[in-house]
Length: 171
Image (cartoon, rainbow, N blue to C red):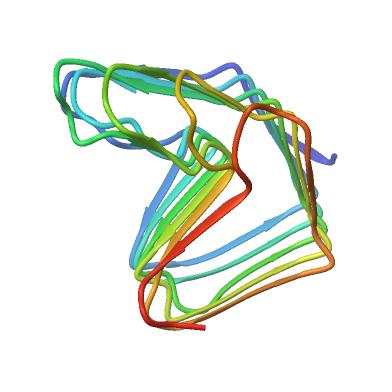
């Protein structure tokens, strides 16, 4: 990797931001390591690596490794320790790895490695999703979308999770 975003901690009772947070922007991340970042608090921890809201994003040749999200006290839930995207259109994730992420806490835990909601047009291509762990029995990848989401040539294995959960009317 030519860029490193490593070892950041965000602990706030109501904060949902990740190490990299972007709202309604155009995000491009290339050849970057996102590792050992933690987003934990009492409300809802999302996207310890990257947290995107709106806008568009291209993420290529990146490694998301051992990022952690956690929430307690009846919060809205943790999601996407590596990457959390809400209403990002388009979103392209290619040649990336999501390895060794962890969710903890007493709230719902969805998409340990990757969580997409409201995706209008998303592509996950040539990626690896491996060895992700959850305090419950939840998915490695969660997609809530009425748009088209393509997952192609992506390896998913090991860990304690159930693979992919797809909700919504999209394909």
